[in-house]
Image (cartoon, rainbow, N blue to C red; front, side, top):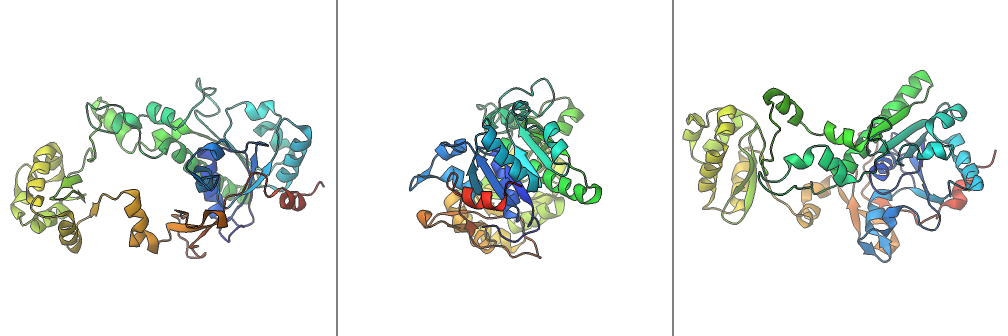
Length: 384
């Protein structure tokens, strides 16, 4: 089940559910770690009940838990907790995303476990972290997006609050947790010591705000949503051509001069409104109107060819179907088949991290059925 990777030989006990934690451990599994998913007996991860359903299996669960093993344990049962300890004796990492205090009440918190397992990396992902006045509050992705500022920057000025289309609150926390775990494993090779990793969804969302905080500090004004354009670079947004939109992005003045030449309007590069990025940003609406007037006579495909040939960053606006059919995506093994006979034809996302020392697999292992790996896990982690 496990594939070779830089984390081969690392054993992860995964007590997480839904998205932030499972996404973290998915990354670890894709990098070669053995991930043993501990689930609630009879029910499993909550996401097993989330659609879409394919031949009775949750596509949501499959996407985040492929390549892992499953064992069902009741953490309130002394017998099952004893089995968990069998796993922990040989584990390198424990990952959990319960509300702070839950693991302590079960006698399985960081302070208790580090006494028994001094090399165990303990990673806790939660809505608001282990400290602070909000630590005990529940959270979902939309809570993190709302409180972390990203919803105030998304959509169009004057429009309704808009959530980012993917669960960036969960996914950002999962990424930061995985990064923290890899850093802690490296630190352990130098010091021989373990550590607690505490990652909050709210913190992670703030860490992904790009330049919004410094813009506020510089101006004293909270940034507003700007639709699909960039707040401080122009041109940098979708522009309407004859049959749809094309994204054009010029991050410096040289690119804009080349764009103006491609559009057969070299005068734009010396127009006082557009001669440098600061002026273009100040006159972004006039710039958009001018560019769209030039683009209007031809289709998106025409402009993609013209601009690409000139080295101007540009792109179509793909829906998911077009993403899945894109030859560049295919060449990078980013949409790959799942090794599950009951889900024939189903493809999932590959691993974005490519490493010269390890082959990039063109398919991914199946997600486990609930408790499907109990016998093998118990054999591999004997009672003393």
